[in-house]
Length: 259
Image (cartoon, rainbow, N blue to C red; front, side):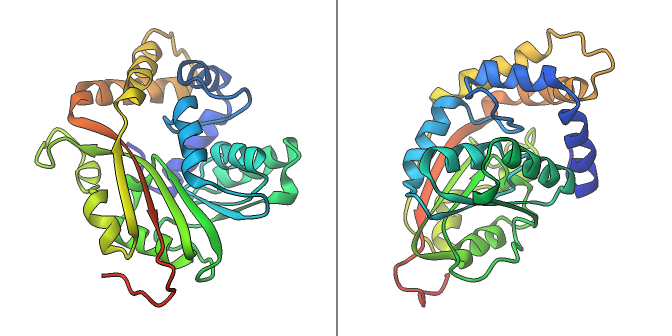
């Protein structure tokens, strides 16, 4: 699986050149027309995320590990909020900037290069943080969550979608997936009112996406070939993961330190 910025740059470049992959993801996951996703959050899950964020017009959302900016731009469009999107792939960031222009949202969108554990943003500068299906890529999950806590305004909200291992000792799974434990890690990062909800209803669409991707003749489409390689890996361990939606808040006291 991809892990470095250079690898992600190549992966995003391939995906941008593959309308087949984008159409497949939108259709099977039930995403809004034009939303360019490289994650697995479907349309119903996106509706839940929008509700969980509770953003109002003029507020600032940090879309962390934003990829091509699809989810953050859609949330900004729905809520009237502003979005700051960070990703460590320059290719993804440049594409997100172009999408913002095309959607008429450039005045409310700011896409930059940054990392999960080092955003470069000021302390207490955003109203909400969203991480869609990317926390596992953080070199240190606790450090990434502490960074989310740092940049949130007092009372600000964090929403995370991800996967957690059913059994943390399941060696079929990549270590980075087995290291995610939000019920423990969010309070330790200084968050309060933590809720971590299993979302089994999201899983059938994910499984269908991987299965249908294997029915395509990928030919010279590098993005589809990559998707098919990932499909074989994911389907082999599909029962070892559970889908999770987590919400948490920064304390109203800006001086409450992380544990």
